[in-house]
Amino acid sequence: MRKIATEEACSIPEVAAALRTTAQTGWSNLDMKLVNRIYNGPVANPDPLLPQLLDIDAGRLKVMDEYGVDMHLLSLTAPGVQMFDADTANELVRLANDRLAEVCRKHPKRFTFLASFAPQDPARAVKEMERSVKDLKCNGFMVNSHTDNEYLDLQKYWPILEAAEALDRAIYIHPRAPSEGMAAPYRDYNIETAVWGYGMEVGTHAVRLMLGGVFDRFPKLKIVIGHMGEAVPFWLWRLDFMGAPGKAPRPNKRIPSEYFRDNFWITTSGVEDPLALDYCIKKIGADKILWAIDYPYQPTAPAVKWLDETTIISDEHKELVYHGNAERIFHIPTA
Ligand code: 1WB
Ligand code: MN
Image 1 (cartoon, protein in one colour):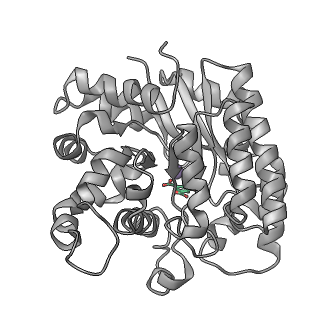
Image 2: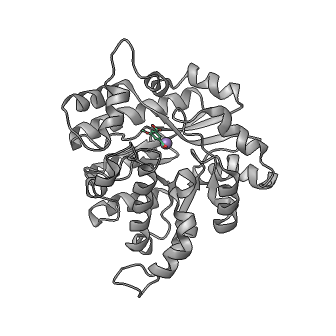
């Protein structure tokens, strides 16, 4: 069975260097713990994740080969360029997108990519999105949740949503640590990270898009979220009950689960739980769920083993989750 992994992280030396510089300014937003650890370690003895993120060639292909992973859908890892000023961010996304496109041209059967953009400047972001589709043949877009503590439902960001819809490329909303307004309870126990904070951050982002009426304005917009839907699928009944049109002063014209079914896709990244997958298949449909590893933050072996071995999921559904849905949503040629 072809295996296309859809939330696979990487970086380029220029972005890593800029994050190191940012770490050295002593800025203390909630992402800085991770940025410090990965990008600001001793040069001679870096965090082991750094060389894995920077290797978009032989080393990565070796791990993929070892476990029968056919393709990584690559993306610039969180927090991407979203902590930089607009000019730096724009310069770096262009570099990163060019570099990822080059790797994909070199290994077309092994790598595809999600282009980044800098939401700090929506007009320039749109230009980079257009360039990434037309010139670089990207498969979709990646954004790391909030930018300067703001979410994409704000009208100033609508040109970005309009462009994604017009270009027919999905936007993958990947986590970063919670924004300042929700940060306080996440400062202890490292719960700003993948253990809890990342999911709450992106789940909140998804709810803002749905209850903010964004999909009434952009009905063909495709949003992808990871980590088995960041807990949103489990919350759909309550979202519908409490979030139905007319229940409170909100702009949404439809119930949230209708947007979730029409406008969202989810990936399995980092949630290797057959019961959760079975629930999501029953709740939102097997055509809405894509497999992901979350390399290099999650190990590849168990990411393959759990789905290969589970018998709760039919083989027909495994085909969709492992590759069929990714081919359709991300414009990946069938093998
Ligand atoms: C994720 C996990 C992403 C980690 C990351 O990007 C880091 C994820 C900075 O769950 O998508 C992590 O350190 O575990
Ligand atoms: Mn990830």
